[in-house]
Image 1 (cartoon, rainbow, N blue to C red):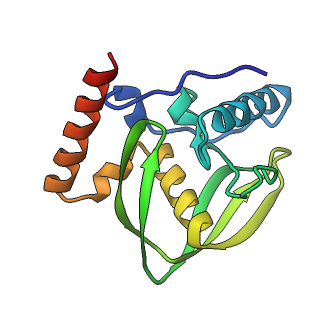
Image 2 (cartoon, helix red, strand yellow; image 1 turned 135 degrees about the vertical axis):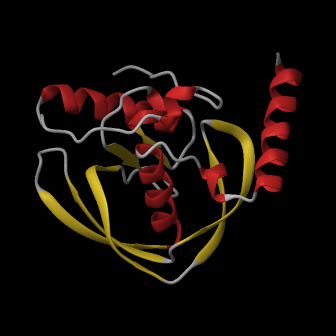
Length: 167
């Protein structure tokens, strides 16, 4: 296993659209292992492959408190949405910045597991937020894109100021 370099805003590669996974062999398993190692090192709850410069439709997630419930979704698609929720979101590609984002309150997801088997999953609360956030990454959409121009500009200034202070 190896730690992967996380792309940070304003890296243009974060805007790349991911392509579907077609090979469910050892290479995919190695990518998943590296992504989980990176997710835990970064203390995140979700990580999309595009964030580590792998432009395939792969997401790893662990929203558990004890960090012992990892799972992956490959080639995910949302097949149903219900309600709304407004939660503070952060992103390891935007270190140290958070803002409230509107998302569907409940979703039904169709995806494949690491062996390529299809499954469906109902999610709400943090898991629904996380899945929607990471799926956006796969389409080149960033959480700040859901904010008003004023809020987005404020967050990006805060991020730039933070970077200057740590440089």
